[in-house]
Image 1: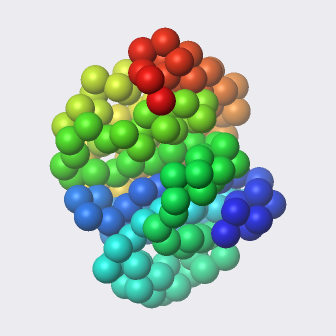
Image 2: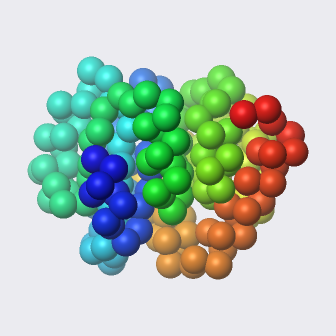
Length: 170
C-alpha cells in the first residue's frame, strides 16, 4: 500500500476501471518498467475488473511494479497522491474528472486522454500531457519522458498546484 509507494523511487498513480482501459495501462507499465526498474504504478479502484487486472499484471511480469490498494477513502487517495510523481487518467470517456483536480491540488503533472472536460483542465506541455485514446505506446512514451525529467514534472506540478488554488475550490 502506501508504505510500498513511499519506498519506491518513482511512482505513478493511475485510476483505471470503468471507462478507463486497463489493457493499455498494463502494456504501458510493462514498456516503462523495462527501462525503469525503479518504477511503481499504483492502480486505484479497479471495481469488478481488479482480479483480471492483477492476473494480467502477473502475466506481464509486473508483480513488483504494480500495487493495487483497491477503492480508497478520499483521505487515502490524497495520501497516495502526495507520495506520487505523476497522475494518469487513461479514460475512453469522462465527464468532469474531479480526481484530476485532486491530483492538480497535490502538485502532480497529469497524463490523460482528451475526453470530456479533460482538455479544459490539461494544457499539453504546460501542466500535463494529453495522449491518444487507446494508444499504449504513446502513453508509455509520455510516462517515460516525465519520469526521466524531474524538472519538467516539478514545473508542471507547480503549475497545477497554482491553478488548483486559484481556480478551484478543493
